[in-house]
Length: 130
Image (cartoon, rainbow, N blue to C red; front, side):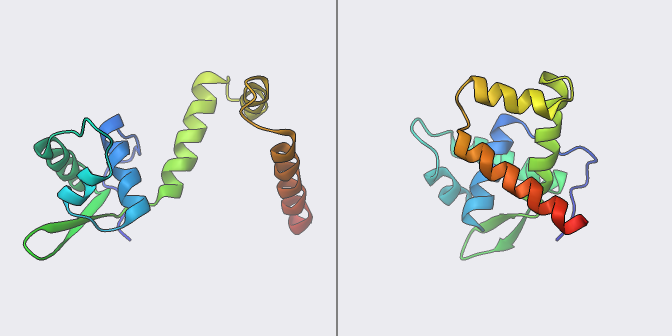
């Protein structure tokens, strides 16, 4: 899998929408990408231009299809998840993951069962490293 050409993994909102579709659905033509948007759908040319920008950045590539290119993600979603989460925690929670989780609890975005599951994951990881 080719790596992005840029050192940063930041995406615009439009780029992020397209990458999410490509990560979830695999190789698609621009027309098929458009089918995944809610109404009002963006213009075909807007999506096409954004896909080409993503390709120039090295996040997307294409293969020849039947009369149209089929685009697919070359960048790994996990790289974006890690970098994006770290950036949010750094920018909005003073680089404290505890503060980030506390905010999720305060806003009732995470349940006690989910927190227990996270704790089991952490404890399981700790026991493997020992």
